[in-house]
Amino acid sequence: MRHPKIRKILVANRGEIAVRIMRTCRDLGLTTVALFSDPDRDALHVRYADEAYPLPGAAPQDTYLREDRIFEIARQARVDAIHPGYGFLSENAAFAAASLEHGFRFIGPPAEAIRRLGEKTRARSLMAEAGVPVVPGTPPLETAAAAAAEADRLGYPVLVKAAAGGGGKGMRLVSKAEEMDGSFAACGREALSAFGDSRVYLEKYLKDPHHVEFQILADVHGRVVHLNERECSIQRRHQKIIEETPSPVLTRDLRRRMGEAAVRAARAGGYVNAGTVEFLVDDERRFYFLEMNTRLQVEHPVTELVTGIDLVERQIRIAEGGAVEETPPSPRGHALECRIYAEDPQNDFLPSPGYIKRLVPPGGPGIRDDSGVYAGFRIPTEYDPLISKLVVWGENRKQALSRMQRALEEYVLTGVRTNIPFLRQIVRHPEFLQGRYDTHFVPRRREELLREAGHRPEPLALAAAAVLAWLAEDRGETIQFLARMAPSPWKTSGRPGGFER
Image (cartoon, rainbow, N blue to C red; front, top):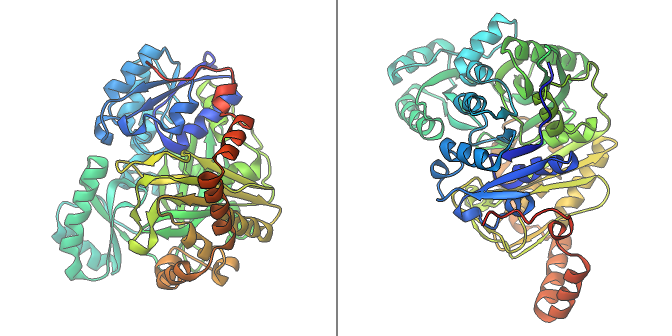
């Protein structure tokens, strides 16, 4: 059953993902509405939108997590639908249900699917019933003593994980019994803070696994397809920083079996819209269900580049009642993504907020930079410090790697510390070049990577920065001339400026 066409969308998010969603909306001729907190008043997503409305305050719980204010703005702006992006309220079943109750379509899965799959231990049970392999583990546990007893049964090491978790938050590795009390308590506190749910469970820790996920599209007519995999094993603090497709470790047979399992997983959860089924693959190439992310993934652009599919466009069409292609396009070529963060790798990857002085993203064949910032913007302290996603495509892995190496050398961003030098070392490391890496690559090579990142010269980036400094400081008239030659796109688009005054 098809629903009326969506004409106006409120993007209940910020930063690069809000801009990315709005770009597809502009391609489709849809009107966009942005939200902004006090620190985001001058953010790029606010400037890009057709309309923008304030969420007074700074902290997430006072702004982007305030459902009542978001619905009030949606009514005021007369939108048809709400797109949650990722993070914030994107996997909040109550928000998805309330969106429908308020008369807005939720561009994501049904609330019940979010509930079913968002609670990790419940999802594990569903997968086991559907014949999808799961990592040995437990239901939610009440005490550290109970967890210690279960860990003895499973065998150390184990992971203590938030039952409502995701994104690497609410997770602790426990290698021996005497570590359980502290890790159990700390994980519960972090889970409560991040997800409003302190329950935790145990999962057997797999040695040297690969983190491989499958992109899913499912429609209201019962059709479910997958768009192949993304390799996500390059991680720091259990959070991904580099992704690629196809995975260098999957055989054709393993890809087929994992794809079929991913489709079964989505069907078992009653899934509709775009989602991702995540697996761990052990050193004997056995795979296990990890979790299902009931939203658009940060790393979705690598799938878009090899398939030619705009996943946000598909999300909108599915929300209108449209059908998923029975046979999706076959992937072509190879794609990689590097997440650019305002953080200091030399200081335990702590966030590095502040003003961006200069920003020159890379360009050329096969380069895409999904960004939410600009020169002069202040990276706030209140939110995730993701600056942009640098994505490249090549006809094969060798070409894609070469383009990523070049793009990272060209990337100029000054004023805040970033992880760009660290990423440069990873994409040139012999093990990464050969595709011989797993989720422990960064922890295992951390000191080596940090040492090289701190000492290796960066000729292209430094030369570009020097030219920019010369232009900015000594040739102000040149800057003014260039600005006149290349006005801001939102001033020439014919669309309203977008600020609610």
